[in-house]
Length: 211
Length: 315
Image (tube, rainbow over all chains, first blue to last red; front, side):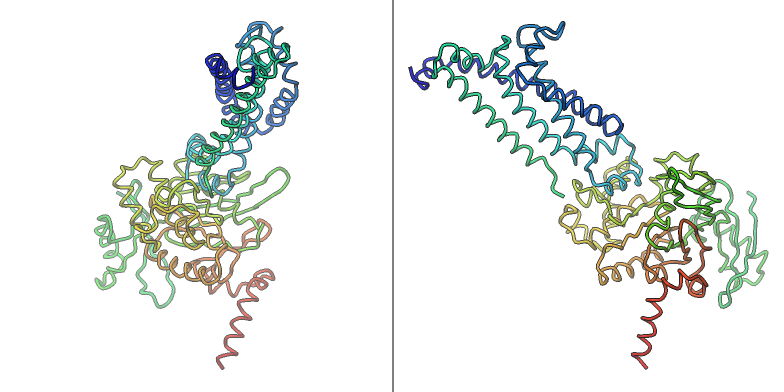
């Protein structure tokens, strides 16, 4: 059975796994953004903490993904077998690009613009919402885009700990030495990553502010 | 209502009937002829200058300086940026702070609008220590123009200019009218420019928008930090001349920082020379030219040689 035959014969299964894959990646990126953006903003207010926090996120990022997932299984409460611990692992991976980009996006706002805002009587809150975040949103979005692509990649491995997703096809194909099965998982996973990167890139471009 | 009436000596050539009247507490500072304070003026002038011809020259003035520095020093860590600053800025005057880069001019400016707090001494704005002012309220009453302009790149010209009124929650229609008014004041066609973004403007136009933005909420005080420094000489002199007209028209109290002597002489009612964080007593331009200080002479040298060159050309 060739790759195309397999896909057409099992389209619902591939579709189902793709959907699972997307849910894994999107939900973990969303959670990472919900944590990472406020964390990044906080770091700009506490510059001394930034080296520590960014360093820590950097270290977490370096842990090999399979090791991270294995570690998740042994983790109480958050870990174990299944999608939940996979999402936790993916969130850990997605945090670094989001925190880092939020931090650098805000700190790279033109100091003259910030001074003008403060000098005209903006409160810190207004400065953040009206000036810093709008000017940094392109960079922040770039971080989300990177996080999303990383998540889609790592999510293929998450099948190893029973989280589902397209990785299931790949791992089964490997153990059954079935190239069609491997490709049925690998090609959609690769397409997903490319599509996500391209699509989010388009949005990022529209969102960035040309100064 | 008690008022203190102090006749002040005035320079020769001006009718000797300008007087200083202390502003009654709780009243708004306004020149005579505005805001229904005429009766007070006439009552006063009739007393001191019985000749009715002179009465109309009575000048209603604030005894209180708008900005007052009392022995101000500002330090960051071990570096002392300004030291022992004591001076006053009176209502309606333009005090120019002149000096090299790093002489403490911008620091002095930032001490006024609470961007910096004095380490020693006190800065008073409208008779109130900046420490007691709510910094946000204070800054919204003070227009601020900086060299890099700092226009918000994601705001249109309209939104940039409307910023402070918007923060102050003016009604939309009032904001619209006011923005149109100030854009016309700085010689920018509102219809043409209101919807443009800073990136679509020339340097001179951006600078005008910066000035319009500072003027929009009609602040009593205007702080200008080398506002025309980044412009080419032709545009600069054009905008300086327009600014001079604006100065006369609006009568705002201004503190103007520059390193350009010509600009200082053109726009200042008094010039204070700063070096190494200290301020030499501010003097009106004619007196400033006579001041005996090696660094001032160094500053004036190019102007002097230009004048000599000019007179050599014409004779």
